Length: 109
Length: 115
View 1: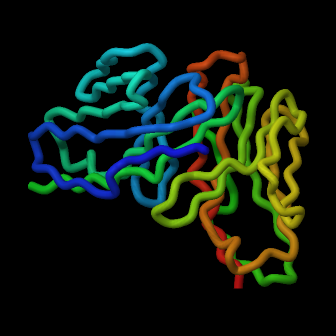
View 2: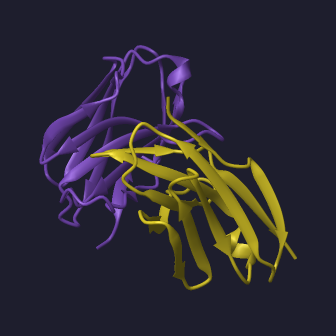
């Protein structure tokens, strides 16, 4: 079966660092994506990992361990505008991308 | 232009109505997708068109009928829907060059309510 697990909600303080974890079990694996989705808006692409290791892009970094079926998204220097849902997604082969339920992040002052 | 445009943004329809959702992109992408998203749930893939041909149908009921008139346009025709079909319908596109890192560009969605 296909399964992508993320925590439902997280709360963090402005200026802090937060790590959002994702574990996956899928029939195929062609890469893992993180998307950000503000309430009522479209998901937007944040990062992509296909090889093990850390990819850094500004305040956001994403890590992948294929042997463990595990990824995390690291957000540094949190800002209020980072309050959103963060969706972990796995490309299962071809055009099939499977999404996790998302982690709602609340950033407080 | 890096936008995917969806219309309408909101739609309320009865179970006997026929309506259509529209999606447009001008990024030269050759793959277009329909996803359905319920509140606090992940987007679920419904259909994929690649080079204007239906590539994937995820066993979607026939009351949903997709159409890809050309490489920039994607429609979803709705007929005899049920209240449980109420959801956010997201259109997305990607380059469709067969690369594994094809990211999806999403439209802002149509919030559909079926009464």
